[in-house]
Image (tube, rainbow, N blue to C red; front, top):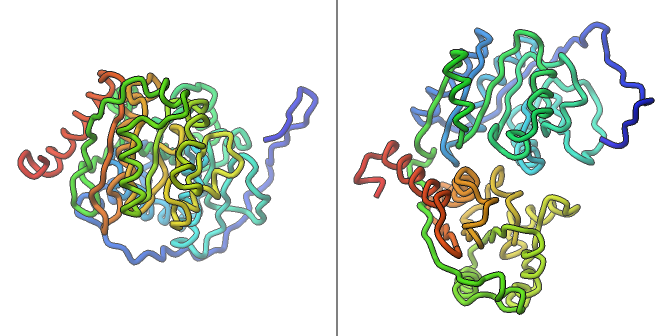
Length: 374
């Protein structure tokens, strides 16, 4: 947001609200599954009666599409809508999708170093950090990936979300991995609730497999890719399958990238401070590069057709069960490629790894029944 000091003037608009004459339309030709349709109706009903709502749906269930009817209803009522998310990558993923399906609506996307945009937007897609710009501005606030870092750990960001909505405006939380705190709040305050236990294409969630990778840090520091990881990467390159390899730290990833570039010089790496991260993700999506090494920054909000995923150092503390569930959720999202490989390379199995794997198996059983899930 640039530098702000104690002598900087912060100005709030207190004049009349601009009148929006747009005839909002939803230009979407997709169809809902029964579960999606029910969730979309439940969410729209909560918006109508100004009730907070939790939309709990597995990775790849089509959560974005579920929002469309509620957003259209709000827009056509003349309400101002904000869809906020903790991650820039999610904003970049959502923005073109909403532009396409709401062609008559002025939409702004706000994130760090986002370009200047003109006009009065009735729909804003924003990182939670950018919400400091607003106060008492929105009639509906939707927080996508409501359990993601840093939002869950930063009280200031949570207060910012409450500050931007008008007094009786409903708050909608959308996530595949709601925290126990979210569930407690939902039950205590009698929120609306939607649950979708299976993906839109009606295939089970890919279940992670474990592969030991002893002393992987030592090997990489000695400028050598551990054998199992090397074989995994070579097989994806041979099969021309796009891949994401998650690393626990930027330092380890930076040590590893020149080793992977010896296999294919077009393999790239990306992390939160990478100025070119938007372009690099786009290159993977457009099949211009074979794969990306990444930190947890790409654990959610990214959809790559037929992507295969490996986690290096899955035992590391940064890979919580919810993070591992989200990472696993990158695989098999496309209807033409509903299966794929998700492997946890580890130096010892942790409770978080087991919790993630068991939760994915549980959701598959809930969505498909015991035999189909296995």
